[in-house]
Image (tube, rainbow, N blue to C red; front, top):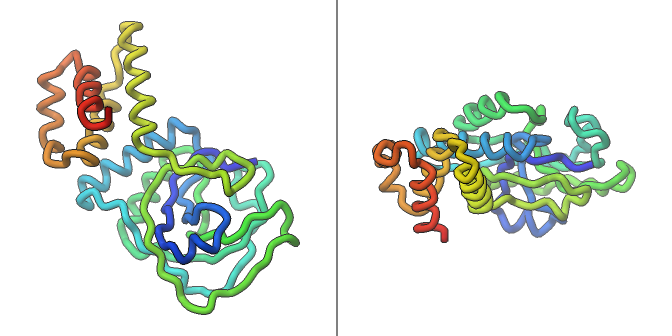
Length: 229
């Protein structure tokens, strides 16, 4: 079972999360490969740096207080989906349109409606559904998620530094094999590191890459070691 890898709006509100047995989220896309998820996340990161001052936060609202059972064939790439119920919601920022447009370039499953799942069970009759008393506002931010486990409580957020560390290992291996690393990928990771640790250097990335032409992987290793370790 499970839903592969994906991109979520992770819910930050403590109140709602206290009532869940899994990480509260709004799915943007799931059933992705790990590589496609990483590429999409980096694309979204760069998009938000250019257009939204690096702001990857979003606001959602549950304005329909009625709890609903979600249809069992929501995602085409999942052989047997868990029974689930929750609330449909709306994303308030218009910038989500560009995010979904980018998601549609990648292989995976996107939901027909934004929703927050409150409970997962093996069978529909095991679900306990209830309505909300008041309209709920949610604060969220974009994350990468590992959703492969059959148990939703075991789903985890993938840390950006884990992805960076993987790539550092890859380019080290490529250098040993005399294979030139992907410069576009190196630039994306530099953007991510500087966004996180020293945004003032973002404007200097291209000039630094030009200075390290032919040795771009060395620049990434140097920056990674300086800011991450």
